[in-house]
Image 1 (cartoon, rainbow, N blue to C red):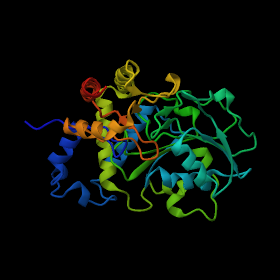
Image 2 (image 1 turned 90 degrees about the vertical axis):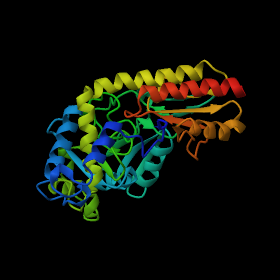
Image 3 (image 1 turned 60 degrees about the vertical axis):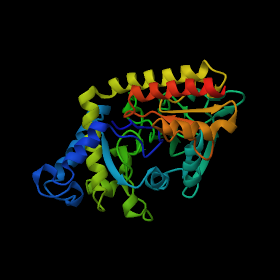
Image 4 (image 1 turned 180 degrees about the horizontal axis):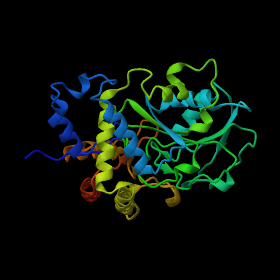
Length: 361
């Protein structure tokens, strides 16, 4: 019997096994049409139901009204770092960027190419790292939008509050947390998320955007990044990554069948609580994020003796616990436990961590 592998990668991340089996079963002859899903045209009658189902499932899971458009855009979130200011900068040519970690900072650097930026640092780094509450953010009242990242994948830092700024266009980079918990979409004007965390394979970024902010086009805006043009062409202005779109439709259906976001939110909290409890009950493992700002998706930790990192990674891989090495920017260790990670994987990791501490602590 083959060893069960648990993939703790931050992305491309683990996909549900039932979805992978479905893909495998139907890959060569999809829907009995005699062709693979990767061989059919995105404009064909065979592919069109995938487009419809993907949007339908996403609207139902997140309770998205018709006030919003849903776009399936090429590339990753980095592409949206440029597309966002080019699409929605209007009156002030200025935007608030909340700096909470690596990815929000990268978005800010790209935004500076297209507009003036009011960078607001909210990270407080002492012995414990925490983030300022939203009410304490020093916003500029003369900006076109506010951009923030509710879950920093690399550092394992999360903003669990939802926006309270009624006079702002609110933009959220939900790449590593969309569909992991309930959110009120109506509090946002634009949500974007690269697919390779909770949604599907890499290659597509999901955009949820209020139609009313699509009114103005800029002459210099590349067509492939123009939200209005993408909407007019049903996300098919260019040839989309059809295979990724197909898998996304299967993942969204899998989520609905299991009970929707309520089910996964409870499961994700349970998984992360188990792992954080293991870390907190030990002086061998260290997490320096304040409890109010800990991510439920990306659990980062260090060993008290960093010289043991390579041994930890090697031995964990031998146990079928893959990709626990922290990001090169931060080092240490990281367990990404997105929706597809079963609780059995987390429990196996915890068992390994306790055994490793017993042997090396």
